[in-house]
Length: 326
Ligand SMILES: [Zn+2]
Image 1 (tube, protein in one colour):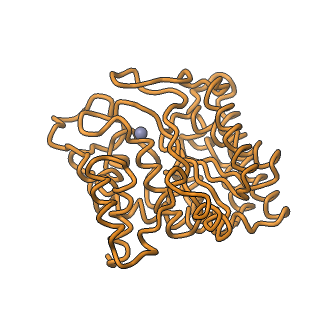
Image 2: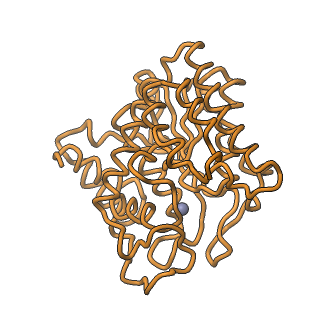
Image 3: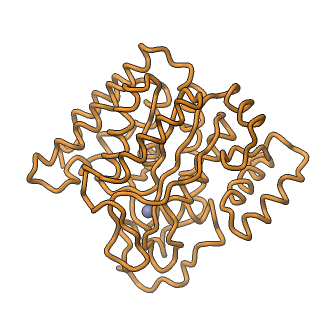
């Protein structure tokens, strides 16, 4: 690990706004490498810094999450704080600014300390969808030329609502809007999304190591934990690999998306529309809403790489295999 990356990691911790995070952040602003300590958080920027950031790269990130039980070992804000930290690292590496994380979305576990703003599996979404639409409209009105909505909360309906809204806003605003859960950018390093299990816990062990209490877990199965056993399998090292994979792709997209011409925009929207249409249609009104996810780790394995490399036609070809072999 290089010293530069180490400082970025500290900066990511600082973005938490926690007491510890604030300390780490204040410490880092004294670092000699000012580029690594550049603040990209929208709510902490003045007009001059905002205008300079937007002139350099007119991308804005919108992290999404919620308040939800994430096992006895994790904080309840996992989804939003991890998405926020990933966006901050991506903006520092590739450009752009990061809007404050939005807490609240579609669904959540039937466990304590969980706020459910739209019902589980509700693809119609009375609250999240219009809120996202208005955010996108205001971001475009303020001069941003690309929007990346990264959701760290990933029920099936949440994912569908986020991606469908992004597709529609791309068309309506004529700028690229990507709406995706972060795990979709790391399918090729074997993360297919989980709940408070190996993947999310490893990410937290890397992004916010002081928040994880693996010792509070007994023997599996763990209450409200879905996926590989975090107690025996989660590690900060795995979290680092997931983080670097996701951040590198987000950074490339942040840098490139504002430069896309309309032809590229149309190719991107075409692939994203095909993906969300497949996710919405696969259940055919009878199967579980998760029907299109049964083989996502194989059918869409290269999605993150193909997206970052603007190989949209290949993404569209992958989409036709979704849910077919599951
Ligand atoms: Zn989560």
